[in-house]
Length: 355
Image 1: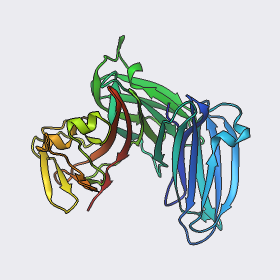
Image 2 (image 1 turned 180 degrees about the vertical axis):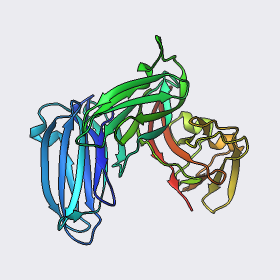
Image 3 (image 1 turned 90 degrees about the vertical axis):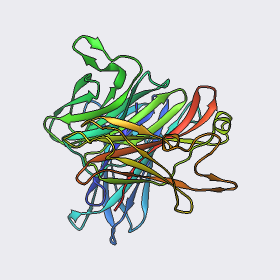
Image 4 (image 1 turned 180 degrees about the horizontal axis):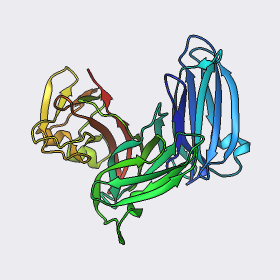
């Protein structure tokens, strides 16, 4: 499963999910001091049973970064599955840091990356959820941001199936979409939707991972949505170039995390070429509260043999997701390369709030 880093970036600390020699991966992460003064950094490692197994204390200079390779931290033992809480202080006051993490396969060439999360919420949203859909599944790593209080966490999928687990202080638990149930019924195959994570006692944070068919991706969940989000890397290869692995395709998922349905026609995805021209617009149908819809360049009328984001020897292309005033949208883009028939190498990134 994907591991998490807890990070209260920009103010105090960061949260990270990670592991060492777990699920055939090792985690590396880096913490940068964004203050103008030195910061005293504390990194606490918690296993899935909420036990703190190790602590690192170091001073990081302004603008500098501190790097940790979990595979070389002997105090974590030969195998570790858990999370980290990173905090920063300067002269007794909260410091300011950011962080990012990368998981590397120990048995192949797979890698996935994600950012440390600045703060959590008692409700957290995941725009992508899969169970045996497109040859892939999703798993969420959910971390309790409190280091003193237990909480009960429920992941409710948009088809009504759910899973509940108790998470101890500072710890994380994994939620696999295919493990969810509705009564005595198990999650059906071919499910593609979204999920809402709720915590009874403390704020939590979450990252998602898609795996299967060669996928090894990671994306950060969200507790807040936005009316407008930007996607700076969007590509759409034609059939032959995609099938050969020469070029990529970007698949976009948009979740409505507001409290009411968004009517049909009120959310658009505008595809903009390298020169700032609109290449196509996808007007979305109704998006019920908590659910998600998908978009790609072909949905905006960019069809065979045309491509998007490729211009001879030049590259460039992005998308803007726009909703009505007051809407709360969360967006994830999945950039995929077909390695062989039915097998893909992909990476996810989150939509960026735009003015």
